[in-house]
Image (tube, rainbow, N blue to C red; front, side, top):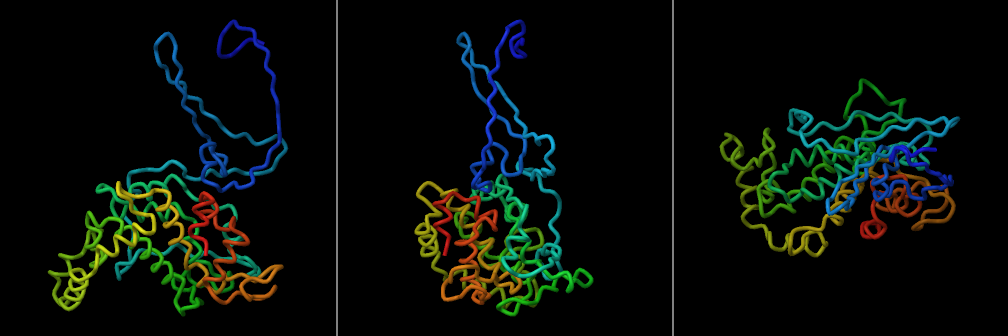
Length: 339
């Protein structure tokens, strides 16, 4: 047949079709070819022709084989730099947790069933890791990126269908520390903010870490200083701000491989953001798994793992694909945060 690229040129096409299986579909390296969500992807190559350089852009798309019955739902892999709008906060100045996530069935590796089909938005996750020390990247930008990127943050709102009443955000009460799931969500966001601020000591990270944020997402140092009735709080925070060993904290970040002589390690920062996202999910009683097959850290098959750290370790060791953000990290980064 005649070539569609070069009119008039007769061409013989030899087409080979092979079947293959992607063993680790959530590995972020597959995102360059649109996996695991079967998104369209683009390749750019440069050709040298008669001393001139031309760019050739090829856009590829995944096709569903005839007769197969599945629906592909691509995630937001390409970010939107502009803010999607104001971030809602409650009367206490806390960000609103995600809506409740009703589930049915047994608790046996429930986290795997809840996360089934969920995909990490690696474009936004990577932007958070890359921009974390940038003057133009704010706490609000960071917050919007991490909540859009990491689907595991929804786990703090898991609740049994039988317990759903009036869509109350504080409904999820059963945790190992006697806190609600909404409380643990706030603590997790706080942990992410702490990493963000401590990576930005050269900017306003120290002030944000000590004084928090005002209603405009700026450090609240001046707001507290000027607010009647909050003098004692301001003085306590200022005392910590002035006496904290900031050099030791910076050395801790260097020792963790996050900060470097020239800036920061993006890959290790990405791994740290994933760890902060998932590190407390097993404090929710409903998510703690039962041991399958071989004994694990003293827990026998059939036992529900009571310790939340061991429960998370069990998932990371026995079923890492249940947490897409962990599963998508490079193997050496997984090893650095597995415990």
